[in-house]
Length: 391
Image (cartoon, helix red, strand yellow):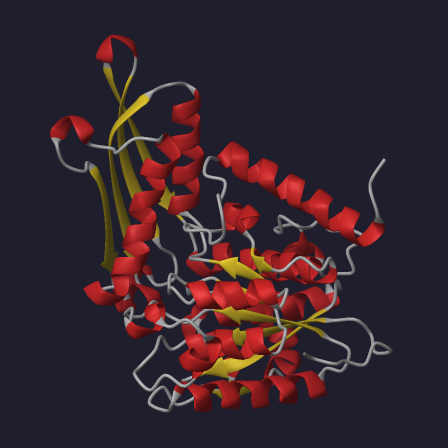
């Protein structure tokens, strides 16, 4: 477990795997902005008015890892998510963010875990008294087999076959008592990892951050269900031109994200969309289109029926900014798991399903209404655990 100097100014330290990516650098700029003028960032957080009295620091710092050795400021400029004029006043603070080389993915998992733990100790030494959270922002990766069958943490760490690139980070955090946010579609929440997190009382939040199109899909599907309107078909197209879009052109890497996007609709509605046709009529496609960059575009065609089986249709066009939508959710999740840690509430937290396409944990809330209610309920539980029962 981590021991920190409680006399230092309290900070939340986000240790980010994938720090030089589009979301990671946007997150860094947001954290730097919060240190001087927090209003433009705090106004975009879902936790802005939550978690008061839960011991979650307002002050934040960031460190992390990346396979890209470039300075974070250079990566921020290269991604072009935020205009230079917006982040230039914070260039000095951004340049001080420590980004360590990612562990060698060809090394044994045990060696990867040890390398990450050494870096975590280095980060905490540089930020005494900080409350650490691991944030996983690595790209979607191909899944693997043997790890799912292992029954002990020791066996997993000693595994010699290739593993997901983010598994070493998650294992290092759990073994050091550090809460985990898995914003990726990668299935790092293996049964034994979840079991260990619960035994060690380490909060675990994931999987696959829900930022734009899928967020609106949950809202609309929940609204159609509430009106007893039958969804006959749903066609979704994502056009994305950043590194994430390019990465998702690999079918093996995209399968997890597509599965999460597709299964979610049936789970909300309580029936398989396309049953009358004998095949699924919920289609999800992701296309890499370089001109869009981080400013992704999403198209949805929704066919539904009312009484007498009369057909109706809805069109939705979202022109969003992928990293601008994602970064505040990462901050929110870091604050939630820090609060859970303070409340001594560990293990996978399904009540954070509002933020994820495929929330881990038992019985995650599915509809939009249930997800909002779950957040209210979770906040009350945290406050009561820390401060005592509310009147």
